[in-house]
Length: 313
Image (tube, rainbow, N blue to C red; front, side, top):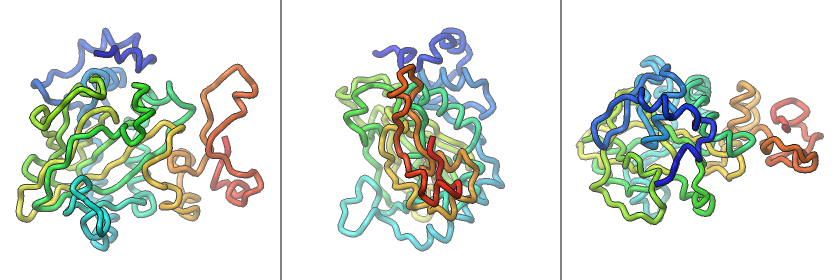
């Protein structure tokens, strides 16, 4: 078993004291805490279990507004990943819509930029990168009869980097509607983020995380998880997914293409940075040559730099 205080160096000094205040939980279940809980407590809980539930992260009015803003795109998009593709993993009766920032301004203001989520991402990811950005946002609406998704680790999208055994991303699932066991609540294997990548596992090890609308399941990319089976005849499991990724890895989604410069120009600076409309600085260093190196740059004469839509850093 690894010592995660090594993986979370900024947390190492506080883990001993904070662990004594981590909310009690039933065996095999993730802790449930309020979004305004002490930041050290949130980090320590994630360190221990690999994830947690933030109850009421988004208020009902915000959930309803996001749901309404996304409804036209969800209605237009049919279920399934793409024609001719084996979508047993992505869901034959699951609706996945990306480009969320261009479809819902509420998503940007209330979800992507939520201070609690950014604080968690800052403390978990920034020790390993100059900055992080959004890897993906998408609806995951699981329809009736959809089979259970295989347990997996999101970090294995970058299988070589995952072997470094450092935090690569923070993932979030917010319930926009029904999210109980029968309709397909997410399965997780608490503390599996500490396991060796080659340790065997099976579905019997998991537990389902039921959410009320507005609750958020927050978890490390190294935690085993998977969507549940929808055993209902007429209900959909509605979740909106978001992940923050270290800036030296390629995101799952081609985010800037899905957002577009016109939309990006209307967004706050931090949102533009997270959505790929800014360069990614490397970690601070005393070496002047190394300090000058940075990822995701754009020519200074490019109109998008001149008008401020894109910012080199």
